[in-house]
Length: 132
Image (cartoon, rainbow, N blue to C red):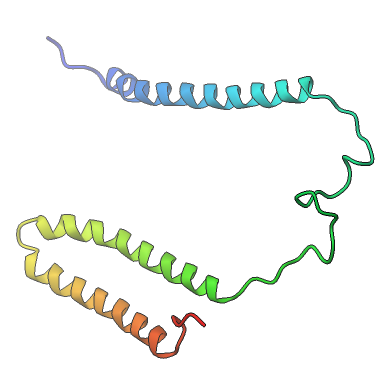
């Protein structure tokens, strides 16, 4: 049996991507048809009542801007930092399982986690994590 040529190998390789591309196009087409049908079938009768700002059945009062507490942003920022750092733990775990990398990668990870712990301790000492 002759060996497959580069063209045959490339065709087999891109055939999987063709299926994914076709499903992506069908998904976009389905959404476009749904939005288009909704636009064509909905009743469009603008009245003054429809153009009013709706606020849960109550007449709008005051400004449209609300003040958000900064403390929520700190928790969100800390979450993002630790979520990204946990992503760095997965490649480390795969390298740690390989032969010859045990002690070195273990020390590197403890240094990495030490920096995270120092940052968290600093935020705690500054009072950033207190809920007041």
